[in-house]
Length: 225
Ligand SMILES: O=C(O)COP(=O)(O)O
Ligand SMILES: [Mg+2]
Image 1: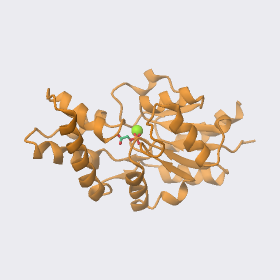
Image 2 (image 1 turned 90 degrees about the vertical axis):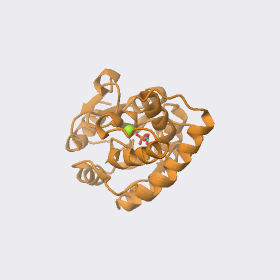
Image 3 (image 1 turned 120 degrees about the vertical axis):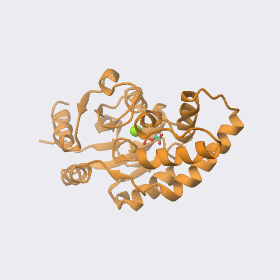
């Protein structure tokens, strides 16, 4: 028998392949400052800790040091540009919508816990016609703390009407594995997202390589509780 539970998803690199639009926005601000744009493949690993961290990681990779105010201005400009272009090329990873349908049909509630700003996350999921699937969509500014601070995951679970003891986190990077472990929530890693450290080395409880594997993985974890 399957126990129904809340499944909490990371957004960038887990539900959606958002790197093309994030990197376009990054390159918009870099080029405007006279800096060299970054190709998509190496820039993917800058994603995962929010917009500011993405810009800082890109500047560091170019060997630039900038004042916090300068980075703040670039971050503001990044967000304005990204807000207008966030669904130009971003799509759910293959099999995601079928997997979410399957989980919902088994009685699972779904939520999003991301280090993207909440309004950008909601706008993106609206544009992809996916918002209605989630009982809560929480971002870096929703509770004033970001992943891997366990408060953001605990509060997301509460907002979605779930319980820590019956929730599972799904994510692609160190912030997701970290937040889940700190909050005491089992975690499934996906190996198709964005992370500078191989996801298997971060030791998620389970690892999947395609969203089609998710419903059976969740069912198996719940059957062993
Ligand atoms: O946009 C980011 O850098 C982080 O987003 P994520 O937490 O959904 O991976
Ligand atoms: Mg991610």
